[in-house]
Image 1 (cartoon, rainbow, N blue to C red):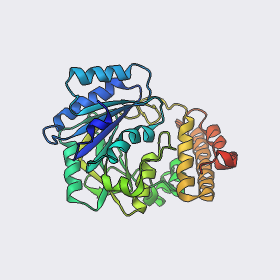
Image 2 (image 1 turned 90 degrees about the vertical axis):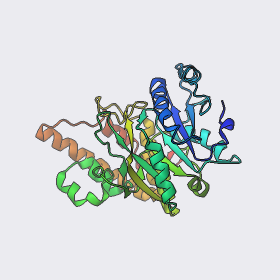
Image 3 (image 1 turned 120 degrees about the vertical axis):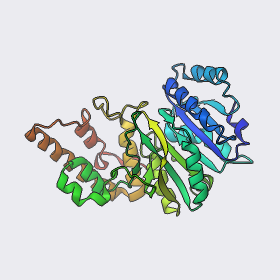
Image 4 (image 1 turned 135 degrees about the horizontal axis):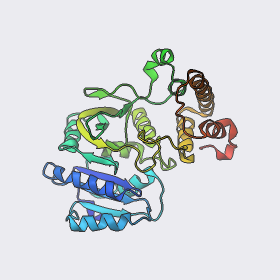
Length: 332
């Protein structure tokens, strides 16, 4: 089934972008079966970002074996264009179709849905037409909540994140990107793209996800753009989703030793700050973050603490700072 065969959906269209995680994607699809009685016209598109590891065949076999073809389509991509590219590949034709859905849901393949999670998001959005984006409570398999409601990054949050000093964190607490997990419904700046519902009108107002981001910062950028256009973003903890963090990239997986940050992480971070705050602000942000990281590493060595920065991080950070790039290498 192709995305063109899903144009009749009227309530929600779910997009799952797979990259070399077919087993996780299949488990995610199986967890969605419990939502079908609650949302009879629910449709799902799985985009495979050119995994070249047998993912397409495995997922297609499961769709056929489990008889998912009435509500799941598989879209193989001939290139790995990243998270935004993969989501847009499925969203674009449906959004431009004759009967686009009321909502789109970005859902990670490394998630498992608790019963009613998606219906809860839909009910919330139906009851609050002024809200454009909402996110689920993400949690570990044992129910421990993960931080998934955030503030927009700033020069202050970058310095605090790098320095990791309690007294500074207290002074800058209003700018900390990842505050403690809220227990109740609340407005927030942005939510994790692992389970994020988006009203159709938001796409119509601000466009699709920015495909210049390969991975990371794309949902932050999208929520900021929506915010500037007047759309609110909320966190909905009654929508519960198990999230196996960082299974595709490994960058955010805290259960393994930190790995070297890939180039696309630095590129995405730089794009976010230059695009949204300008070149000077981005350069200042790089400077204070670098100072913070250096001070943290010195303090960790003096106090005998484990310095859990990724391998070669300081050198990579310096080489990717704004002042190290030629104008042609900077985001436009």
